Image (cartoon, rainbow, N blue to C red; front, side, top):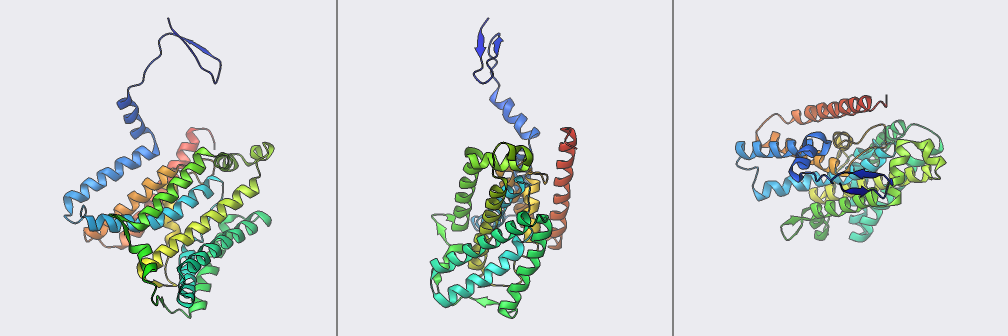
Length: 340
């Protein structure tokens, strides 16, 4: 008989140590976790499209697909942290329009790429701070606050431009931001990867990450444990808006113009991807890997609809159905766990 002492619990287990089969564990992860199931769907859909469309696996199409989903993913990473913390931001779609025209105006006037980027990210952060102030300071539901902000930002985009498109004048280096490459990797994809790594480390390897989870999971217990709940939520609001602003910058760089009608339905794509990735609307539970896989699944699905010549309106309907499915899965999981 062998003994294994667990340092964490101090318990002594008699008998030989059982070694898990890595293949069995991988198979179990694939079928029992949200991330695993999403990965299966992504692979299956990719295989189907590679067999039905000769264009799907071309370098150009893959580059376009990854560049497009990078903008959704960047905003979704911030939204994941915010929803884990128990709040939501519905203004990210209008943020694309407002920040887009504002940044383009600043770039055209200053001819300075750093100043344009700083303006976009700074204003985005300020909008997040305003959302946090109204939500936490006045104790108004974030759904209501950010729904109102959605209209305010969209209206401001139209008013500031008289509903005219803001085209870029010069600054070829700005266009490279959304269309350039580092080796064979599109620059937006590289930026997405950097943001993902940073947020993954924050959520899984830092005290702030632990505070975000406990704030959304049990705010009262978090307060009793000394967590500054309002500060944590404020940081999440600010980061979400700043990343939405970064996404807007990449979008106007790809289009080479700022358009006040940009971002319609973008908030549904972002929130939908976060929920489909396994993050709970109730807060306290979520996965950045799940969010990334959900964005990839939705992007691949939309890409396939275009390549197969299917009516593009199905993109909207399918995204809505997947959001509903994600909410139903979350509700069923919480009932199974006895959480309501």
